Image (cartoon, rainbow, N blue to C red; front, side, top):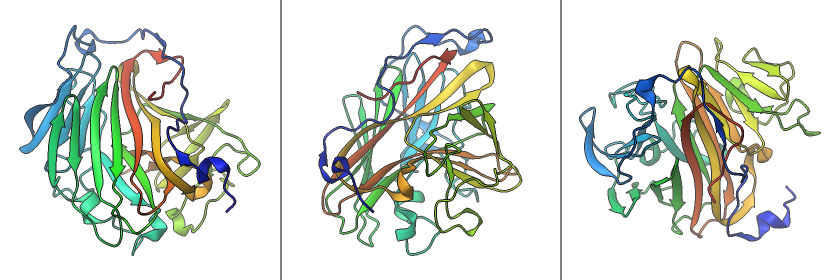
Length: 328
């Protein structure tokens, strides 16, 4: 793979979402019970979530819950909404897994087996946690196999919840940071196209779905996808599918004109390659019988033996945004 100087240099700050300020038009169907309250604390407080040790943070825009027993964010939604947008089963014995904000190291082709992920990433409680100011640090157990250790950092930044993943310098294996937000199906999930010579349709299909071993063009177009101008609308079908896009924010719309945005933020470290041919914004649609949609933002491949950090943000509002924002 031939890399640009951008990926051979030490990256200080890299943002791939828009950097313009957000603007909103009020939605006509916002129920009064969903309007943000006048004032909320923006600090992490102890709580219980389905019997699990957890911390909660509430702002005027959103409410977030991080389970220490799962080592991850398990609830994110408007204040006063008991359901939120994330799919996180109440029991850790659920066969669909623990859900919420999943963090893996990749690429997946480097795993000993295609599935499952390392238990330290997917089915382990936090080894430790601490709160420093408005930041919540969640340190995960070591995973072995040469992978670096993961620390999650959650921080309220105005109407954004920053979700940072830091890997330490202990790894002997190059690693890609994979941030996945497992959500319940949205009313509408439409993604702007990024047409290229490699992908004139504006997106690609990704392995390992249907036994694929490499990135493929969507030819023929899968039944999950329909074009709407310069966007593609994605819906679940009777079989799973995975889509790849050039880096961009993902926005899912829910009833009453509330939306969930998963945007890309800053990247620190030495990037050496772009797995999946650089299609680092991804959407996984589970089969329709399983009400799960995964919104994913992936980093480039980061050099072993060096610390790195990759951030995404979550945001929710009522009304249709005329733009998206990035962490700055």
